Amino acid sequence: MRRILMTIAAIYTLAGMGALVIGFAIPWDDPLAAVYALLAGLPWTFLWSLLDVYAEESVAINIALITGSIVLNVVLLWWWALTRRRSPQEMP
Image (tube, rainbow, N blue to C red; front, side):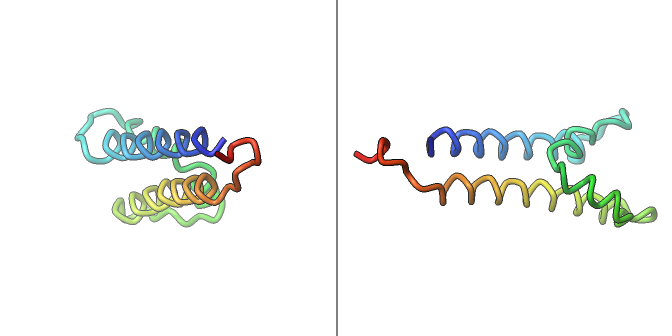
């Protein structure tokens, strides 16, 4: 079970980094390029929206909030995967 959780955490980490690159590092003409980063940062991006934390005048603050949301999800997934106790069946 731990291997499955670590695989999920690794896939999410790569997907989150890809979403940030697609959304913010590559210059696109598409205004919806950052939607992948918003989705990867859920539920935190939704919470920031409800709390009206996003800045209207600064794009850098908004990018930092979305990046922080993805990082928080990555940290929580890796913490969950690495602190999960092994079941007696998985013991060598």
